[in-house]
Length: 392
Image (cartoon, rainbow, N blue to C red; front, top):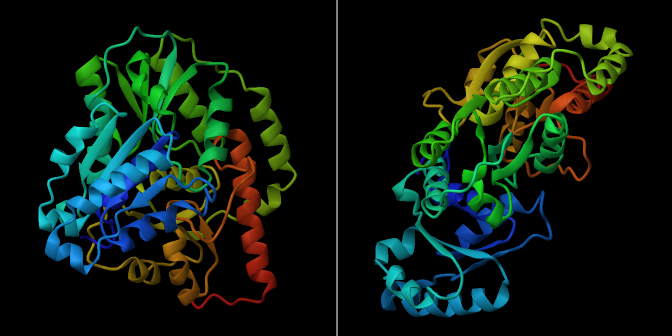
């Protein structure tokens, strides 16, 4: 397993738990269950829809099939879910438990998705891709709904997922209807994905767009995460242009209000120009944030690391340290880098487990521009107020 990209089980779990009416059974040791739960609960504390067989030493000797059968019965009683995902970890796959044979006796209960997701089989990205492939394999052709789209690449445990999705839907409300959000939606909505006229795919999920296009003929476009005014305008314009809709060129009332609010703190924003920063994040958000910081706030992105693809032998910490960056954007994992270098830090990407968001203060869309700038400036003000001196 590559520690920087995570194991296959984590990627599969993110898809499974993002489906709002699913349940997850992890056939593995307790560590796999606690690890996945730890990343999920900061944003969804009451949304616990998972169980685990909890394999112990004696199961290594006698096998885990009896244990798995009992866990299946318990999971079906415990959760009145629409579907059940079964994810297998390293230990039962090494033992070669006959999970498929056991699941054959449950065919008439509810849709059950089995994914062999041991860490030695691949990284989190592969787990995500294989899980979505399983969903696509059970989709069937639907009548196309005019001017409808699927949004692909959002998860329930993404930082500010609900707030960002609210802003995105608001941004698109007078342009299109959102048919499904994959995989963060209800199961029936996801299965209805072939009804969309267009798939809107965030950076990093092009393969999903390609597979849906190949199976159902649905065209797709790849878009960057809609940060900022220009980013949001470009996001909406590209979607409208890909459908038989006349793109709007006139500023919306929401955009005008955003600009009016930003003008109140124009000098503070001007002070951001030229500031050297580092961005460490997943494919979905990293490129979009880099564009926004440079093209709209005038900052200088000295380090831009896509954690989903990074193969650089130099550690993230060393890359930031060797740069001129005096501000770091990342996940909770990168906080220690900022602490070591005594530079301010702002979370924006998965995983975030040291901050919560229960309001509509997302970072996407026109309204999100205000929330992002407000949060950024407050972080810088607080950092300076505490008398920090950047060690760089």
